[in-house]
Image 1 (tube, rainbow, N blue to C red):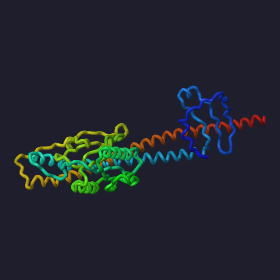
Image 2 (cartoon, rainbow, N blue to C red):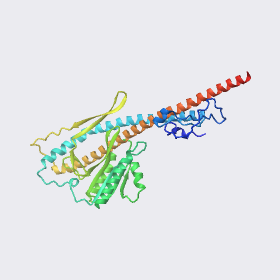
Image 3 (cartoon, rainbow, N blue to C red):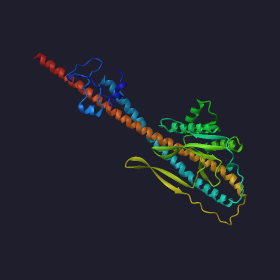
Image 4 (cartoon, helix red, strand yellow):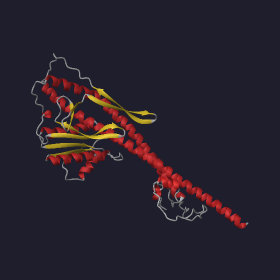
Length: 380
């Protein structure tokens, strides 16, 4: 006998019946296929609440099997939640370990540009051209079971594609992540330049593969602008899909959105995964990178433009790596939240099934006792 209708036990709505029969006697006779319980009419309190429990025609063995299945599912989802929590911590450690390099790079870029602000610097990665074609780097996850994480960034990409079509601009996609790859492979009408897959933990090698592709597209003037779509980590329950202009780069080491509004990359937010009152939580702090000015008598051994040509590709690589790490942290946080909700649902379903099981077992025992008493009365 199937128990698929057990989930309706706590959520079914009452039906208005005219002339409902009286409550049948509890000593209902047991049938071979399992105990058949009569549904009691809803009480006034349950009618006011709008819900009542309906009869469940299911054997005790099927109920026990279903409860065990729900228990196993709860163990799996709880384990996946803890694994995602541990991986979030690893992703945070990767961000922190790479921060000194990024901070020093921003400091050097800032001070070199301060000395070159009166010169006409011609650096290919900072050259602004009239936009005719745009490359979109879309960063998604490699796995599911993370709520709406992948759908959110794909919808953001679809919205941006629609905006570019409305403006009459050409575009091409650089897809990063298995979920994005499968999405764009099923839509051949969307032009894709390259499919890339991310690893379990983003590395500089992964970022360099993306940086080489966008660098060649931009320098060869195949595209006039490169935009990066990724998910910014906000908290364990919130993440925002955002778009940043990747190329052309800002000479002063700033991060700009698609509207050209730039923020200083030296001011950053750091998140730490901690526990508070037995629950996982995130603490955030704003970190300001000191940008100390170089000595005015400092002399460069090489031409500052050559130094800038060497540093900007490193800065491009660091920005892509940072986006990959943010996206991974957002994916893991979304998976934590999804598995936490699944665990809570399993606990609630187990409670509901246990209540149904106990009621049926009680009714069966009571029915057997009443049959024994009725048989004893018949003998006397």
